[in-house]
Image (tube, rainbow over all chains, first blue to last red; front, top):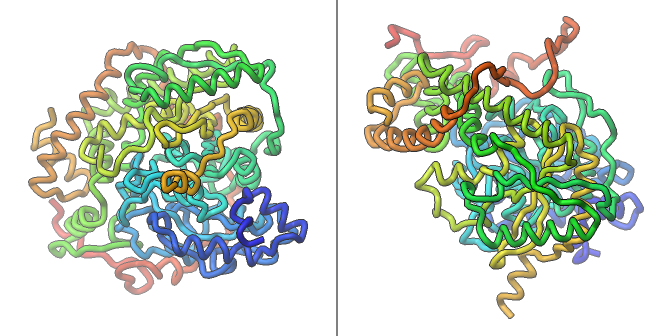
Length: 487
Length: 96
């Protein structure tokens, strides 16, 4: 079944393994070969075999819930003995002495580590061009970016070199690359999954989540990720088991379209808007009601985000100082110059920019005007969502205002790059779950449709996304697109 | 507009050594971003409680029981300059 093997979703492959119809070793080797031959720069490291990875991954996976289906993991997840560099030269060759909790849990559930995927340095970016190890290319069009920061994970899943993948989302870093690569990406409720072993960017926002071919795969992966971890005091017990989605209609479901996120300032492209409107029409056909709603403070979410996240990053990245791990560059014989030389040589331009922005926002005389105000805006945004969810079930919006753009197109304009996150940061600041599903193509490039719900509504959210996914029937793929072009 | 002196001051706080070219570019780029961010000053935020964390957890305490941590040689294995079972650093000297 070697050729058809790649046609299976991860959940189908896991079921085939458990039924004895598919050999997990053969499955791993097939994906390993594809990952090793990857031409998109999506991988920074590829496993030799199912046991090369960190913990007790079970090669004999025939009875494990995840069936030995291999998992690609974003570089910033610590994996014991395996390079974990967060896409940064300051951590080049770093092999952590322990494994991130979510990676360990998934390995124990039968998803062995396939490889580590490229990303924007320390997850700071929306295009993957900020990786210290070169940009990732979009499998739909290799002259374009895959989105970011989890661009390697998204490109690997979209190109079929990984059955599924793990990413992290701070302001959109799972949802946006999923949208630009035509796959499913879920940012869970803040606190649903342990952050232990994730190399931190902005600790009050960072969340791990799945990037998958379909909604069912995302649910299956999430089921084995959630839960309280004594090593992360902000992690919570998920109130219910994550179910596999099964809903076929949307009768009684109320969808809210916030005018603040679909119009002017984010500059939603016409093709993205068209696909969004078509999806709303499908939702209505399935029985959902679609109504406008207001998130009055959403237009200020980007400003609050670009104060809070850099402020937290400037503190989190203080640990990269040439003392305990990673790069060291000697200074003039004293400690301070060693710190400064090391950090200046090891960090890329965007990371320096955000450290500077965060340090400035936290510095004496500016703290309350910037950081304090941003935290108050955050309260207002969370309140906006709370008010909306009193009368509607889910907020829907485009995931990204644009489809995948050309490599280099926005690289010289940090503010234009930040505007990419316009539709995704409000949910991050509110800590609520949001999923992006492919809704179609615009000029041959994938468009993402985003749904967000109240905290811990993942089961209902995924059920709704599942029903929409069926109705949309998105079956395009980079390979199919390429063969149509060549015909 | 951020001045060059402000950029140099913040860089010192952040332990970054910027070249002249980097510092000049940083002043322009950060000013553009801050101009956008400044719009939040239009909002009336009087009396609004700040949110530092969205999770409704207060004082997450665990039992004060010893548990195994990394062995010393494992913790030191990636250090650029392990010295006598510790992390070696240059002399703090007369800083700044």
